[in-house]
Length: 291
Length: 328
Image 1 (cartoon, chains in turn brown, green):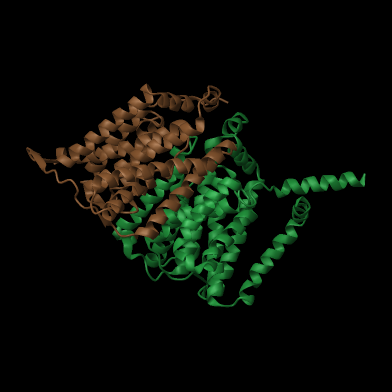
Image 2: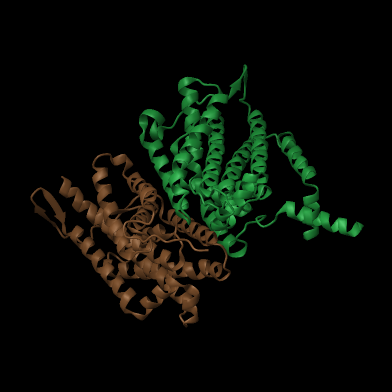
């Protein structure tokens, strides 16, 4: 039973990690908590499902278009709503409030157009399962875990081995200095939003396939949980987000087997405990504020 | 424009009294049940928005969990009134105390941190409170809600007609405005504004940041609890759906729209955003989409809100100074 919950927790935790990485990336470049991030996760899953139904079950094509659309939406959000706030050097609160507005618009638009009921996600990949002792592991779970690990590797490669990754790191260290070095800062930030949104959309679609159901409110809960994961691991540290996501997933699965009504509250409880005892997170470094 | 503002600033007392007189005459001019009900809800949202403005506007700490304190207050009052038949004086005070206590326990660890942790933590807290209201069947009856909450009564006089509720909330609004005004004008208020401007500089000036922040967070939550108690006894029925994150965000949008750290701005923001969906009845379903768009547009065009940057005291001083100069 314990191992079964551990497996389930690692599966769902790896999707939290994917979303938490998005938080970390955006927080890294802008020091902004993106409240709309959970909405991109939800909207990615909706795009995949709706396109697949519209195109008569062509999952692969629907998935690719969905990723492109969600990524474009993320980049557009930065371009139209956040860039001007940044250029005006308005307070950080203004950008935060703007992302709350964007989340509200996305969530309620989906609610209006697709309805509030839970949508069933057809089983596109029926892969079967293996049984080890008392523990049942489905190939879907292995697939989700593997995709998450591969994406994390890919992201690390982009960040540390490519030009754009170097530019992202430069912007996150010092935006003005990066601009002086000839980096197109606005492009880099929009690209960061694109990557974060695509990761969220992949996670959303995989969770939709895993539970075979999606609903509008799924974005809100995952946004909160993966933020908790990012803070637990140490916000703005990439491996921290991965570790945090896995831990939150496992703790939640174990906790839910005790009391299922409070399942969604567990991550917040973890978040508050982390903030009390180690606000810099497990892998984060303590920063001193300078004037 | 500046002259109009200066004129407004010089006649603050007169304007306040005129607005109060209009508020008192309102039910005589518009006696329909519907308009009185709308006005009563407006009054309740003014109390909620003013209390949120204390922590978010004046102190600069973004809180997205105000509906949680509102809900805690409402449930405290409802449970005390239905199970123990307590008088409304007790239920209201208990609601404020319980909401304030919750804010104290939440604020102590999270207000230590700089940045936007509070926004996320309060949003999470709002969700936890809603889950507790939903799942603790023994105390809150979960999704069934609490029915037949008795109306407030004192010494044999019961507030039950809509117009009586209206005057009751007007009195609460006046008290809240007075309280917020006094806090802001006091030494503590200057400290809060200093914190919102620059925490490090405020700390260097000897302000105990954590103490001030926790204090104002508790006061803000207690006022929200008060509004919750009013809501429970006015509606006579509550369930967890009224206290979700949508509600938190609605209140938040009201203060952003009207102007942070501005009492007249908050009042205008609440009235406009409460009446807007009524005017655009056909768009009822799109209410929150429109709210979101307003929020995005507001941040692009005027991030400080309608009346956010207007400091009437300063304008008055400047105008008075000019006059004194002319006389010489």
